[in-house]
Image (cartoon, rainbow, N blue to C red; front, top):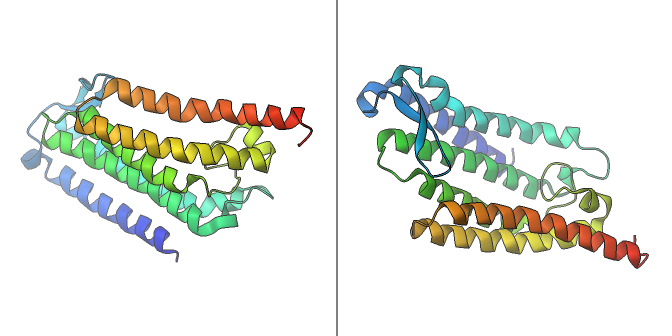
Length: 222
C-alpha cells in the first residue's frame, strides 16, 4: 500500500476515534447546550442544535475523510483513456491525502469551537485553507492532465500545453495566496482576505487558460 494512502487510512481511523470520544463524553466536554453548528460569513453562529443531537455533525468530518480515502481507489478506475490520474500515481495519492488531511483539520477546528466557543472560527478556518493552498500549490504544477484534480476547464482538458502553463501559474498563485492567508489569519484579518484568496486563486487561472488556448489557436499551434 502506498504510504500516503496508508497515512490517509490512519488519519481517518484516528478521526473516528477522536470524534467518537467527543460525542460519548459530550456532556462532560461540551458546556453549551444548544451547540452552534453553522456560522455566517462573519463567523457568527446562526444555527444551533441540542447537544444530544450532535452525532452526525461531529461525525461528518471522519465520514468525509472515509469517502475521500475510498475515492482514492475509485477515481483511477473511472478515469477515461489519456486522462488517467495514475500517470503520476505517487503525486495523485499525495494530493488525495492533502484533501483528507484538510477535512480532518476542519473537523478538528469545529470540534475545538464546540469545546471553546470563544474561539474565532473564521480565523482558524482561514488558517486551515491557507496551509492547504500552500501544500497543494507546491505540487500542482506537476499534476498530469486528468478529470478530477486541478484547473479543469474545457481549454486545459483540450490541450496539454494549456494544461501545463495554467497549472504552473496556479501553483505559484496557490502558494502565494496561502502565504497571504496564513499572515491574515495570524493578524486576524479574515473575511475579505479569505474571499479575495478564493476569487483570485480560482478565477484568474480559468481566464488564463482561455487566453493561452485562444493565442495558440490564433497561431495555429493546436
